[in-house]
Image 1 (cartoon, rainbow, N blue to C red):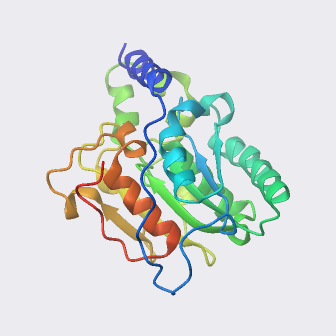
Image 2: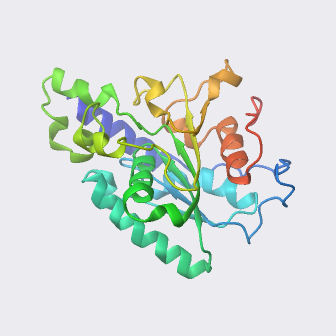
Length: 258
């Protein structure tokens, strides 16, 4: 069945992913004149997506560490199959643990796929607006995805009973709540990244936010760059956008980054 094939491919990819070579130190200059990222900057939490084993995010975590960031990888409880609101509550507790361990007043968040929705729910409804300084989503279906809706069409019912998939369907009650009112509450610096080749977020513009967010389409700057949904956490060009967003520097994707 289609859902089983999607889950099997994603799980296999997550298991097979191995840490990539860390990027060289960044040359980005912060717009404010502040120094480049160091151990005193906000700790960064990389939030995994559906079926996102923590090892799958070691490539981007390694790049961040090489650039001086303190990095934590958060694997969604139950691999993200359950209610996204429950995952957000668990994430809220994790953020407090990171703040306690590091002594930081705020964290920055890089959320892949469902991880971007979990993080956003935390910011909007669970007090995270004061605890998060910067939010970056990678291929998160902020407005839902037809890939979730189509499962009903092919005879798998409502996402074959996977609650998170139901909530990521276009028109879900969850998304109506999440997208009601201001997309970008608080003083958080909001950035989204999307790619034309995203297999799981369709239409791809549904990975964007309104209300003042910086929305980056990789191919707008680098039309020949091919980046899939899982590739957003591996791709060098995408990483340059993440790094710039975390450093508050102008967003200028490096099309030749490895």
